[in-house]
Image (cartoon, rainbow, N blue to C red; front, side, top):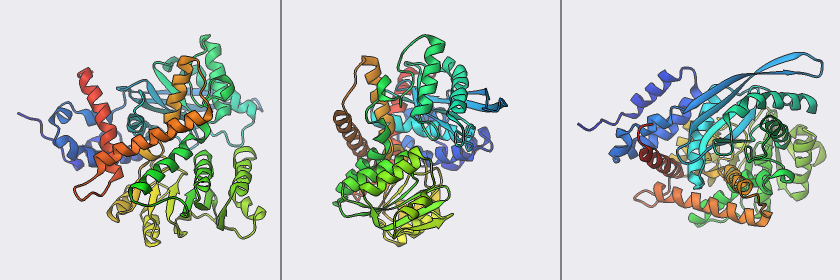
Length: 450
């Protein structure tokens, strides 16, 4: 007798019972399951093999203690994790996040999302995520070094170029990757492509820093072209002022769009004249080098306003790019954007829109690019860095940019193929979920029940 496909509520209640108190993870699974459960209902081989339930149960979660000594010789104790979600299509791949907001639930949701994101790139990469509740802000270089070395002294047992290849994420940049890679080399005696996001001097990609932000804009450009729109002349609101937000702004400016806002955890700036290349370079120095606050922008450039404690979603715009953190854009923010006649919303951060916000955009017919598709450019270039390291080669920036453009075009094509309805409208969320799921599911079926 054929196995009955569970309804969404039944499935999610099972996920919630198995993962008590992990709301971020449950949200991520539910957002995917809403599209996949109807899809597997018409594909008996998937639901008979419990593929979705198996993807929603990580292969393993490694949790460990990280002891280090601060500059005052105080012994500090943090917790580290590596969530290896699924390696059906390749070695585990996903970033490391150092932040006081890191929990097991957050890392499980990120690893789950990473599985589908990596699948969409077409590159042989499984899904993983890791990190620590260590916060590098306010720490000296020596303190960060000691923490990274202690963290890697445990993590190195669980990673490798053909097993699991971490990268950077929030709180983990080239500095942290360098310290961790140095410790890995010392412990193993091997130089191998076990981390991506490295500096170009020792095997890094020439485009990795810009890749996620650029990729978001390349995906946006494809969405607009499919809707007979163009990027030139459009106004854009961006949240965040980190790596993704700044390089998305850079590419938007180069494409002729007007960037109106940037933000950080304290508030946002609104520049009605728009940021130009000179202003953006000043912000890069402020945020990436001096680690200052975005409010300082208004002291440097007249005509701009600072809005403390607020997000930028009430500013009228054609395009909105949430590039800060998860669940930053809620239902009310979505209503504000829709009321201001936004044309496209593209996620630069991971799951920055709540479920209710995502539903509002989809119901209103707004072009909505989900993170697992739109911000896949970073991990795509990380995958290319893995290939460079394996072949002991280095590719030029222009070649990598061309490869990134083609990868984002291909992801867009997959989303269109699986997301277009009978009336011709494109649901990019549904398309990304189904296209990402199918490749992983087919690989899992080929392996049997393991």
